[in-house]
Amino acid sequence: MCEHEQKHCPRCNAHFECKVGSILLCQCTTVTLSQDERDFIATQYADCLCAACLKDMKSSYHQQQMQHKLHNISPLLFPKK
Image (tube, rainbow, N blue to C red; front, side, top):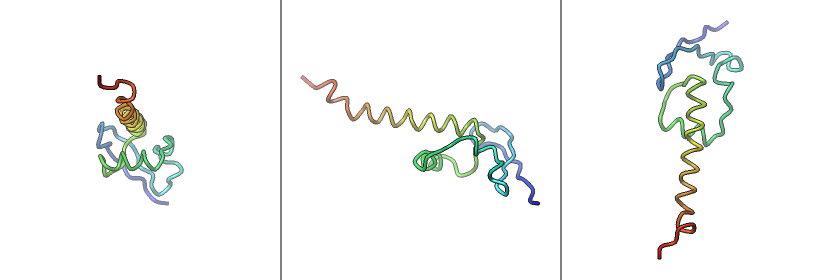
């Protein structure tokens, strides 16, 4: 049986156990991420994050997407006079 890796989250420094050898038991599987959300996180962090930070980053991704959409439609809502 493989040993699990003890890690510290690079975002919040929380201690957690990475179970890459038993991925279905790993704490990260409690957070469902789309490929776009994974790509967003990967642009900022190269290593595993704790589940709490994964949830926060997922939320940050959606906030950023909403801001982008609002920015794109703002000329329609507030046309220049």
